[in-house]
Length: 260
Image 1 (cartoon, helix red, strand yellow):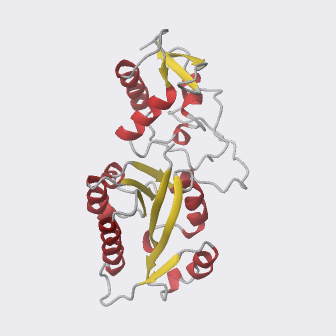
Image 2 (image 1 turned 135 degrees about the horizontal axis):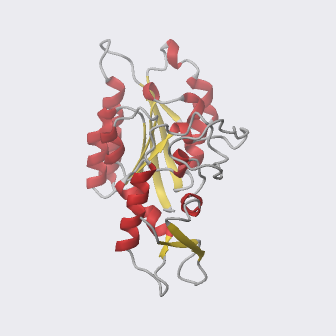
Image 3 (image 1 turned 90 degrees about the horizontal axis):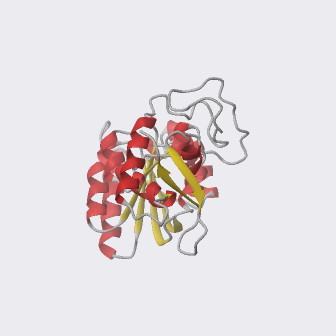
């Protein structure tokens, strides 16, 4: 996991879920220290009236943007201007863009080109271009408060074999119905072929996970019914062998491919 020291979180209030805001900050905090939190929107609008109490309690700075002309993206422009100003200060090492709006794709590309680590947060409806413009993309549907009780899935999805261990954080509505696990198997095989192996021809699962996130920023084991990538791999013994790492240079588990 990355350990950033100066992260900035910019929230498009028009295109995110208020009820997931606290969970977003909890998740982003696993990447490092957040030093700037801003939410952009016209908070005088009826649809944003509930934001006041939440952003106060979470110590998020509200950037009020009045609509000069109906239907124009004043909020988006203000958020982009702030992001570019922050970029040119050279102070920040990571930027988090909380929105499902594809209009932020060029911003993500520009920030990434300048060396900043870019994390996107949005709903599953977020266009693929925006997801791929980020180093990492987090779907709101996969975030839970930890207070919610896990929901048992009533039926299997095509992404998972029978009797597998379901992710405790994922509900049936969070599991992506179109998640193609064959793509993940293909990426795991590429990682196995390209990454450094140990003396027994095993590859560290964490290294493979980093590679998959680079290729597919929106990847999450939760989409396939697992808490961790290692759990997914363990559930396909016909394709992989897995072992716990026992040396000082690595931790967790390693795997090797044995099937097609």
